[in-house]
View 1 (cartoon, rainbow, N blue to C red):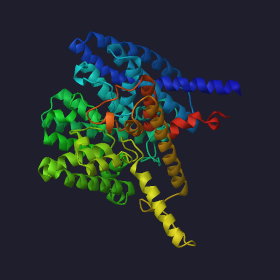
View 2: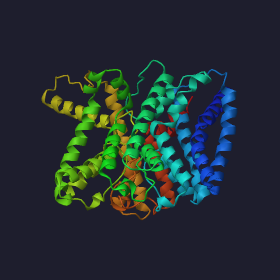
View 3: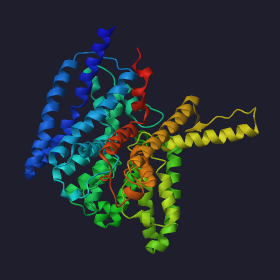
View 4: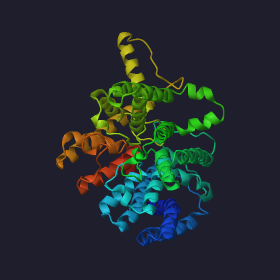
Length: 485
């Protein structure tokens, strides 16, 4: 039995090495740019990890080519978490060989793959252009899921990949939009890539140069929010670019399977989708309230709506971009922004956070419990997407809420113990757990994460990855039940 388990673990390690083979694919483009621009240090910074990973991945891929494997949920949890961690380590090498410490390099890489949008770099524009491109590409691939692209090719290895999708895809319910998971993955990538190209074209039309448009379209689509400018999107001082970014932040936080259904003409599924309706209502209500509070600040409704809608969706979608210092806004506007940090985007999107559907489920359940108090003999079910919701989803959602805010509490206490004020500690914990990347206090729109102690940065990195993988995928690995036979 032990020999059998060892053989399975050895195979999983080889599968993991094959999964990491997509890191060199991403690094290829920054390497070409580094060569074209003569960035000698960066050529070495990309060539070294690429060579090592290609050798390992190619050997693993060949050894697995004719094997038939059946992944179970346990294997999926391990592979997804390990892939994310090792991808972050691999992605940290270019930052480390450039000029950052190992801790800062891993933090920056984890931010990218987890699409958190946080940074420890004060002068972004001082980075080599190839490193800026790498940072943006890592966000883009992390947004849709580096595991997803692997799943699309898993049939070549002879086994299915739905176990990986179940472990990686954000949200309480996982579903296939086509009978074959490889086809599903390819369709989602097609939607993701098409939207990215459209956004790139609009940025070019708005006046960005091609490099700026590439980097910003990659990070905006990933709900990452990082910029190649010190002033972010605000550096362009363009109402058109702000509006385009607002629209695409809104689109990227919508469940990507809905776009497939839209293309198939299934409009009724969009109309009946509980999460989509709730998400749009939250965005509209938050934008309107903040708009009215900002009219005295910006002098007109149009300007007020420009800033209100941008920051509302930036926080709701966990993108974390900023075009104004919202900490200087009226109290009610700050209160709404702060409240949006607890929500997140839709399940099945590039957004992080709790996810709107979970809030909707618990709201419906709470309303049902109130009715049950009045009518003890009554039978009350919650409805999701026009259908009666399963009780196990309610239980899973409640458990997720406890885990999510338990993690925030622990991270807040550890951060505060390092000497950071309690308010900034809580905002930082909320920001990294929800992959938002910004907040209030010391990590507000004018700050970054560089001042935190090294052990806090490692803690944040772990929590960002856990938050990106929806908690359960990570924390199940630390239970005794998982390691039993």
